[in-house]
Amino acid sequence: MARIVMKFGGTSMAGTERIRRVAGIVKRQQEAGHEVAVVVSAMAGETDRLVNFCREANALYDRAEYDVVVAAGEQVTSGLLALHLQALGCKARSWLGWQLPVHTDDAHAAARIEDITSDALLASMAAGEIAVIPGFQGLDPEGRVTTLGRGGSDTSAVAVAAAVQADRCDIYTDVDGVYTTDPRIVAKARKLKYVTYEEMLELASVGSKVLQTRSVSLAMKEGVRVQVLSSFIDESAPPADSIPGTMIVSDEELEGTEMERQLITGIAADKNEAKVTLTRVADRPGAVAAIFGPLAEANINVDMIIQNIAKDKGETDVTFTCPQADLARTQALLEERKDTIGYYRMIADSKVAKVSVVGVGMRSHAGVAATMFKALADRGINIQAISTSEIKVSVLIDSDEVELAVRVLHTAYGLDAA
Ligand code: ADP
Ligand code: ASP
Ligand code: MG
Image (cartoon, rainbow, N blue to C red; front, top):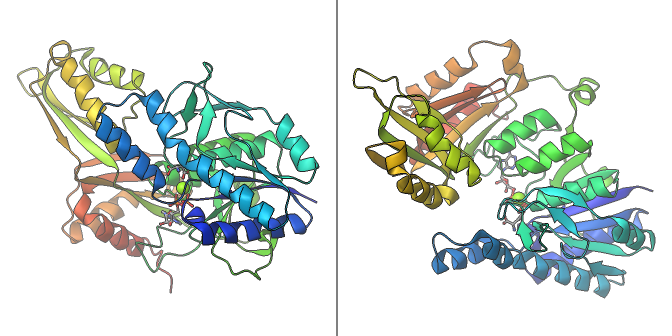
């Protein structure tokens, strides 16, 4: 007998028929002799709908109230799945974030899980009851509802798996594993049998939304075994133990397999970035700190940063990227501090996308970036910014060209399926 946490994403939970199918998958897993807990997302599109209501109320909405609104989507699906499980004759009940509770910090809209009290969950599972937990939501130290950032149900699932010391955390989604790139963009993408935590972390952080970044770092830290697999399997399919999804494994585990290491593991694109340029910033110590300090305090994640070398005037342009969802707040914060920072003009551009190639093989191979730049240049794609890490190269391009860029790179690195 194993203890398994199963997580179902938005597409899998979108409507009565799909929730009924999910209930069937969960029931079969329990019937295979396992203890199960389930983490669910809101129905596909629901969180976007709720976010829009907040934006319509106020572009610079209060993030604590935003959390109250957007956490509602998962409350609905957790109750519905418990009802469907009961209809199939299973013992099931929902456990909302505040009921367990899932303790988080108070960074509303991007909260971090600190701890999950697992006593009630363990008792419920031991009694043969299926615990259904809404993903994405938690409780801050002041007793207010928090949410974990978009895609956060993956992180809820991994955190629950760590808290109950599950043997595995199965992430059921609308694709049957992690591919070399988004299979919806590149038909020739190949499914990966294994991906290392490190590579998955990098892929997620540059836009492969199949897993939320924090879920991967948490799984790596807590040693949770994560599998990505499809919930769109037919009723008679065997339980997950025999369905080959993608396993997220440690480097050592991968070495124990027959898998050949590829130079590049995958390619990711992120269209949710925005580019901000401040012109004629004073070229003096502290100027950059005056820009990025307030953004960090406001929990705004700045990614690529370019500062041109000042010419003779002692002034320079500073360009950076931030999530589009934070652009309004970024602009407001920098506008307020225009005099302190001392810049001339702020220019924002949301029509950008970041394309990245990821692979641990890069550590020992030169020329990965050069191949990327050449492949893009050959198709006339202009690069606006570049950033690199040990196992990744990212470029910022016009968002209209993102799909072409991903396809071209997928071919250039020899990743296309035969
Ligand atoms: P869920 O609602 O189940 O959480 P998401 O939409 O968050 O699902 O994530 C699944 C989606 O991630 C897929 O439909 C696919 O379009 C996208 N995706 C992006 N990159 C990859 C990749 N490398 N492998 C598989 N799917 C990917
Ligand atoms: N419903 C949330 C979102 O759409 C969380 C999740 O689906 O993981 O971002
Ligand atoms: Mg998701």
